[in-house]
Length: 145
Image (cartoon, rainbow, N blue to C red; front, side, top):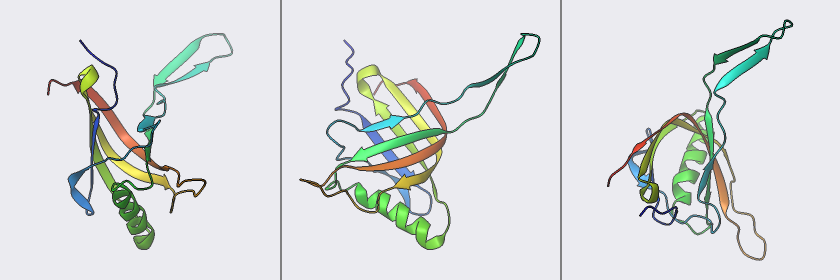
């Protein structure tokens, strides 16, 4: 029987020249682990004669990773963020996400850290931090692990 649980999901992230060995991301926010935005697939235009034309378009896939302020994975994202700022350069990464409940594996390629919070919001308690990565490609396949 398959399940839709997220509890056993695995997310491993490698960042070129910073973390060449994949780092296991952990300590997710209570109601959000990660989420991807919709990707544009086609450009559609309607001609003045009422005929539609369409064409495939390449697009990026933005992703938000939400982790608790006490997560050890903040170090990975902070190092990525701080190194990019200090070097005034972009560092790319690759990742693998495994979702055993639905028997799927996703390969994320050429990702760039595009947004992040320098520190967590302080309210009644410290709040989860969101880190945004934009991926060149995300590919899914069957997984039997």
